[in-house]
Image: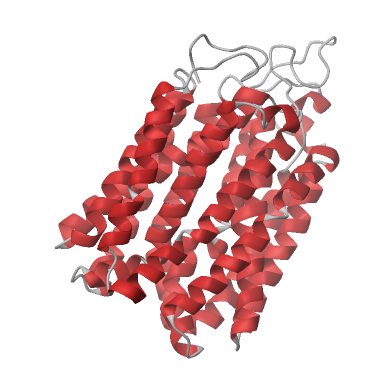
Amino acid sequence: MLVERTPFFYGWLILGATTLTTMATLPGQTVGISVFLDGMIEDLGSNRSVVASLYTAATLAGAMILPVVGRFVDRRGPRLGVAIVGAGLTLACLLMSAAGTLVVLAFGFFGLRAMGQGSLTLVSQYTANQWFVRRRGLALGMSVAGFSLGVALVGPVFTSLSDQFGWRGSYRVLALAVFVIVGAAGVGIFRNRPEVYGLEPDGGAAPALRPGVSQSEPSTSAVAARQTAIFWLFTLGTATTSALGTGLQFHHFSILQTAGIDRTTAALFFVPFGLTSGIATLLSGWLVDRFPHRYVLAASQACLVLALWGAPVLGNGAQVVAYGMVVGAMLGMAGNVAATVYAHHFGRRHLGEIKGVASTFTIAASALGPLPFALGFDLAGGYLEVLRGSALIPLGIIAWALRIRVGPGARPESVEPGGA
């Protein structure tokens, strides 16, 4: 078998595969869709509020399936899960390429968000979490950093595809890319828990009397996890980043246009955004292996406040680059926290269902994020008021994160005193 023939710890091969499958979600991520958004609006003869509303409804509907996906991978394993989800994302890209009406566009959005942003990310992070425990923060940080570097290429690559093939033709190309990547990296390499193969997470041989999840780990059910303040701090904190970060990305070119920034200069955002996100993800991976997750969450929320206040007043290319670095740092830190915190506090045994429930809130929030920004623009002719008002939400999350303490039941086993 492939696991036994691999001359090094198979978890590192898993990590590379999950990085690639996470990058395959880019056609369904807001940062990817935003490149094609103006073309969709123009070709379909619609307006920004209508398309944003369709995106919101489709994303909300897509989020509802994530607990089911989580339970499925808990019971059937990630290999079958990634095969089904990858096929779904491929079909969603093909549906987008055929979108000639708003109805078809809505179904395309549903497929992209449910299969791409939601399910494929869930299955990929679930798989990586199964193979690493002590070095989970660093390992997941490396994986999410690889995804962030992929984000850095979204601007030039997706723009080039759009210029050459149009947005519909671009989605046909992306469908082929998703099919190849998920088939080779996901179906070809994904495997379930290392204990099944006589290994321990992080490498080494598993002791004979420790089947399944290591005894040093917590093993909390989804119901019990939802009864803790820790679950809700990180779920609502991640949802805040998702909602407001999605709003900033979805309307990126429009927000910067109202600040007097042309489209070419606005595209400078993507490279520093992706690179900084990758660096922040690696750094936060090191941090969450050593310090409470709540401090990294608070730092990401502080960057979000800076981004919301700065976006509508950018004045030149250098400021756009700095803005990209702030947004990248925010999403890099938040991405690592979201990828690792649930396994850290609640263990691996029920991770799929726990993370599926949390991801439902996160993706529902991402669905709602663009809508108030669009309404603010349509009603006020700009984004200043809605962006400044939205900054109050991450400020509240910062206060909560700095005050909360892990109490009884927040993490049933292996709780660091006073940490979160």
